[in-house]
Length: 150
Image (cartoon, rainbow, N blue to C red; front, side, top):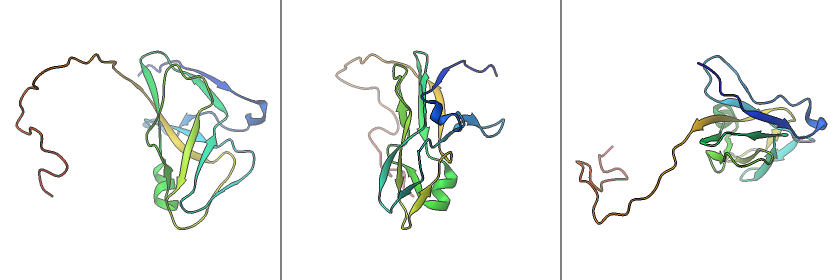
C-alpha cells in the first residue's frame, strides 16, 4: 500500500515533545493523536473540554480526516469524543482539536502527551442532488429503527 503524502505543521516549538500522529501497529487504520495541553487537565464527570493537539494538516481535496475515540479510554475511563467522528475538512488549516467528554462517574486526569483519539483519513465523494417525485422501490422500503426485530 502506497501512503498518501499529507502536509503537517507543528504549531509551536513548545509542542516539540508531543508526538505527531502515528500508527501504533502495521495494521492500524487510525493514527494516534496526543494531547498538547500545557499542564494536566481534570475532566469531571459529565464535563467536556476542547483539547489541543499542537498540529495542523493540509489534506488534499477529496479527503477528510475523521477524529474518533480510543477504545482504551472508553472502556477503562468512560472518556470519548462528543461529536464522534469529528470531521476535518480538506480546506481547514487550523489546529486539530479534540472534543473530549467524560461520560463516567469519576474524574479523568489527562496528562500532556497522552493518546486521546485516533484519526482516520478517508476519501469522500461529493454529490449533486437529483430531486425526484418518487424513489425506486426496495424490499425494505421505509422500514427502519428496529424494523427487523431483535
